[in-house]
Image 1 (spheres, rainbow, N blue to C red):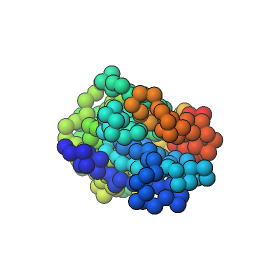
Image 2: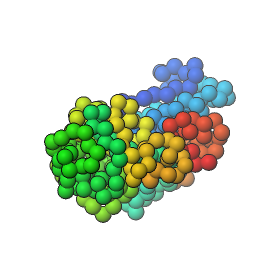
Image 3: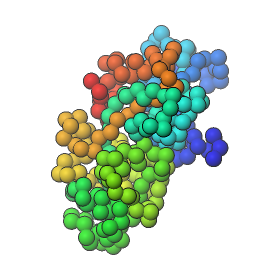
Image 4: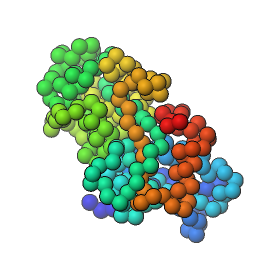
Length: 271
């Protein structure tokens, strides 16, 4: 798979430029990011917030691409980007990189609006996504009938990795799934399929039905309080310890009140 294709899978590259900086100003230093489609909306907002500093006017720009957490981590490790955005935890195979935690996020189980599934237990989730339960008639609270359409994420996804750890444990996800390359594609697929069920970052539940997990609604308030069990971490991954302008930006993200305010709009701040 080519580099251009990897960055474009399931995503649209977004350039976030400093105020007054023309897009052709190649001499302006850039912080480049790639990776998680879950982290991308937050990373974009944080970049825009950071560039509100008048001292940065005309002195910095950001370039943001997506492609999945594994792509971001690999890009950071190879030095192709300043920051690899990741919504999965570090793996033993991640060598030469530092995972800088920036926030937490809830993963919501979603169904079509026609299927007002109120709640799912861990056992139900395992049974559904392993393929043991294949029809909605066998799921308590389902308001549709017929075969269940499983909509998941691709292997490069941090959301996939977190879903496996948090909800599935050692159980294997069925091979009879429709795997999507981004949160947005899972969201739109479930929205268009009455029999569909999937999982997304909590920022992608518009137009779908987010089911409660173990009796607790998947929403920001419950994620912040710690009541909701389906919460994972967001990271900005760097090749070694962050340096220079990248270090200053990540420090701002982790510590500045303005950054924490941005994070708190849809995600869970660390402080």
